[in-house]
Amino acid sequence: MNKRAVIGIAVVVGVLAIAAPIAASLYWAEKQNLAEQQSRGDRVASEVLRRMDLMADETFEMFRLMKAAKATDSCSEQNIRLMRRIAMQMDQLKAVGYVANDHLICSSFGRHDVGSMGIPLGPPAYRSPLGSDVRTSVRFEDVPGKTFLVSTDRSTGYTAIIDGDQALLPNVPDISMGAFFGSTKTPLVSHGDFNPRWMEELGSATEAHFSSGRHLVAFKRSSKYTFASFAAIKQTTVREGLQRAAMLMIPAGVGAGLVLALAVFYGTRYQMSPRALIKAGLRRNEFFLVYQPVVELQSGRCVGAEALIRWRRPDGTIVRPDMFIPYAEESGLIHDITKEVLRLVAHDTARFLKAHPHLHIGINLSSKDLVIAETTQLVRDLIREMGVKPHNIMVEATERGFMQADVARRIMDDIHSLDVRIAIDDFGTDYSSLSYLEKFHLDYLKIDKSFVDTMGGEAATSQVALHIIEMAKSLKLEMIAEGVETEEQRRFLAQRGVQYAQGYLFAKPLPFAEFAAYVEKTEKQPDPVVGAMQYPLLTDS
Ligand code: C2E
Ligand code: CA
Ligand code: CA
Image 1: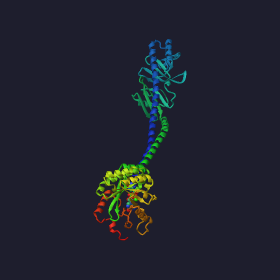
Image 2: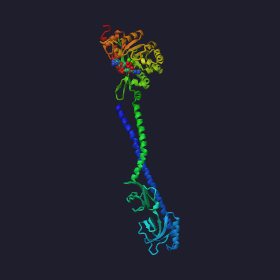
Image 3: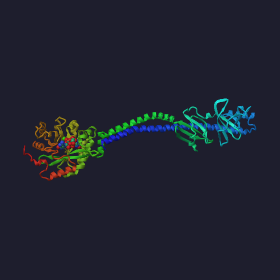
Image 4: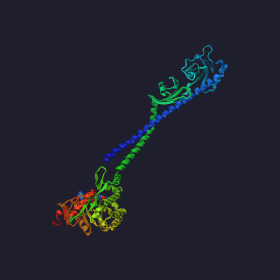
């Protein structure tokens, strides 16, 4: 996947990481709030119903007791005393009375028909199938401003006078509530908003919840009587609840979102970091080697190759080592890269080297490899695993590798004692103490391309380049010139006694199969085809 796609995905994921918890918290806030308001409604409706049931229980108990007294005159002194006693004993009944022809004739307070037909009550609002007639909102002159529920036993005329408002809960002002008989659309008691159409929603169910336009409504049907209760919460109240819940949930959602977004940010940053990319590349075998032939200048023959690492990214682009070796060194992965190089060398070249035992493969070691004791062991294992001779392997170490001289020296000595040849790479470009040249066992000196570039041609040849050549000779080091691109350079090097060279003049770094073909071709021809033979040596010294 390319970088832009990864960043694009990371941005989308990051936005989602922020938005999703907020959306989720809002969703939960809404769900939570709705559930809470619904259960508030339920609790109110249940309580109203419980109180209504209690009122009806006492009413029917009173009907039973009065009937059982079997008075011949319902309004006799004795019967009125009984009414008074029952009214006093029962919590819900304000008064017990006797009704005939829609008038209250007498009650636990005494007779009401002195000089009149009694207190007129008007026709009942509801005739219950359980045998009672119910009048709602009955007013009495002596109790101004108050209405009562009046329930009369149709067969005896005994009547319960009840303060229906006591079924209601005064301390929840934001909830409308009440009770009504199943088949009527007039409430028995109610306070606050009431819409007769709500009752249609209950149907024959024992309870119901629904949201109607401006209200969230809960219903409960009595299991003993023919009435039901309701509680209705205004949607505006529901929304206020939502806002309150959201005020609590959204900060949590935002917090969670930020944490997630940061996790995505750092996660992506880590995944995009060179270290993570190199690790993934190693895991997915994205690295491979190319081999640049090293040629003997006198004969033009190929004497070996330098293994150079390449990284094929998942999108197909090939990355040069200069782009990732420094990161691998910084992040401590270089040793893993070296191991991978050794594995690839063994895989690519073992068989070929056995068939061409005079060739060598040069392996670049990082300065970090020279302070890790395991490196010697790795080289030893490589030779054994490949089944080749030690001189088939050459290691190239740069001057930087010698900076921790003591450790490096021990490791280099160990490698040297395996009979593996050692080359000093990029000579003269970096670390400028030359004392190590004598301290270390070295076999080859690689003349860096920057010096080769100054050789031959019109420009005055660098004194440094000549000095390096003289120094190598006096130290008995063989030389390999790097980055030879022109015939002039080749000729100049050969004339100064430089033994070997590599560079585009001979061949670029090649995939292994092409390198093998290159070797076969140059070996078949007694007179090599490479540039060298087109310009016989020593003709123009
Ligand atoms: P180096 O060891 O000095 O390798 C020589 C570099 O010069 C190679 O670049 C090679 O492709 C390039 N080259 C060879 N002939 C010519 C030429 O005629 N003209 C020009 N312009 N360039 C030429 P490359 O392969 O990009 O490697 C760059 C550096 O990366 C290497 O420098 C080496 O320091 C490092 N490197 C390469 N492979 C490995 C490896 O397997 N392990 C480690 N630790 N470092 C490696
Ligand atoms: Ca090298
Ligand atoms: Ca070099």
